[in-house]
Image (cartoon, rainbow, N blue to C red; front, side, top):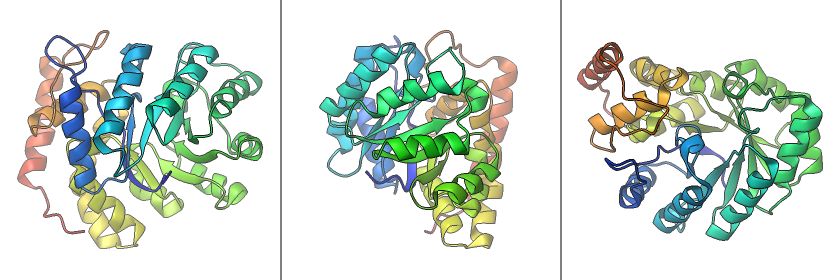
Length: 299
């Protein structure tokens, strides 16, 4: 499993009736890999995993593997209300041909380290798949501290990466100080990618990449090779769009932008609703400005 590079957290393509559109999903995965992405993560937060059934998640994973599995790794997001279901989903991902797992804390229930460690340990230990721990305290109210990640890494040789979405670039530095190169660190917030790479991150679980993969790859590669001027130029252009990834309606915003550039649909599942008039006006303005000033991509 290669945890480095730009790895999109893909949206879940839905048809007008709200069903998963597997044909569109195949086209989307293929386009992202052709555009320079190094893998995909399906059924994450951006993929509306909380609204997908167990069987839908495994079907999506199988479709993604069928689409790109010979070219790039497919990672399934593992998040459930119960530990037992999460473990079952992890084993199903292995059977479906996934190369890795993105391991989340349980939906809804947030508690102490003893219980959270037991939950994620059960998932990581359920298969031999390469695992990435997902730390997103703003969304899930569970904060995996650097010292706790050290414990998990010591006990689980197949824990290979951390998706760091605390929004604090110092966390990247702290994890690297304790674990050196034992784990690959990936940025999980779109508007922190340049800062995260500067601190030592080597991968990006990206959101707006669903609409702008070439620009995402160009930005990441410029940051990685230390081309500050090029990274700054792309980042300054991209930031208004990237900030759409860090608000409560990030799914609706990213799906709307994706649909506007001809790469998806606007359809979301409840409890999410379509954007209201004020929100539409805001995102239309951001996208219109971005399209007028879109920089040429050269990697």
